[in-house]
Image 1: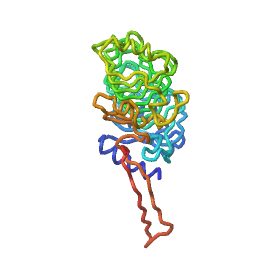
Image 2: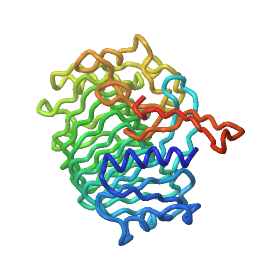
Image 3: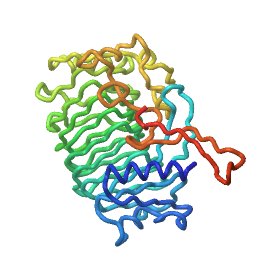
Image 4: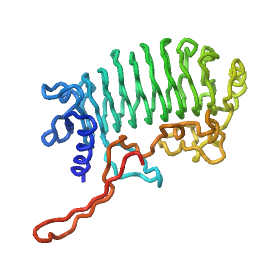
Length: 347
């Protein structure tokens, strides 16, 4: 089944990217093209613009081995839940145990699970991160797109960053700690227990249509966040009762349509006892919640709304996957007729 999926993915990627496709498998390098990302991108055979398909399994390479410093597209098999049934998929993910370090222009990564930090850095441009599960740090990156990821940390620090953050679920730590960041932060569900949003006066950042949650009894935004030029608009801000009054006073400093004080329990389809959970499905907005109709167009705030809604299945966009196969027990006329069904990953 893995081989059939790989063939389908390879055909699509070859046509779409018009570049070579290489396979990386840490446990079975003899059946793949390379064992690690560094082996692939450092090879004389690998050209800028090529695609790496990271095969399912545990990738135990060091952070040094998980390095790509050449323009490329990195695609894993995805992870997560079936959107229609909220049940686990039969998906073997590509799981990296250590940091992944990407430091090249025009680099894209999709469908990867990283148990440590996925780092995009070194003055890169045109970086694209989609449908990954990781801790994410971005430094000195322009034209950055972070879309439909499940992030235990999003840290923008130590250098200027520009681009769009949309359709993500971000839990634990969310920190913008550098005063030269120009972003559109739109339709995300952000649940923080550490830090907050700093320096928005100088960041030139627009914050719209998000669900913003703080579980540490403090304001989501710092004093510097509030400016009429770069507004914080049409968000649903869910916090504990102790911080609602404080934030209402802060929001009064500029024209706003934010909904302040919606409780966590009244926002999501499933109860979140601590305010943070590892299951993306818990952050779906329940019928009747303020977030269902609070965005700028009367639609849903948070990661499951907007132009690019979060997909629970976590499979990389544009890559078909095998969901049914029929292999007969016996041959007919010395041939074996195998049938299979393939679905699009955006379902």
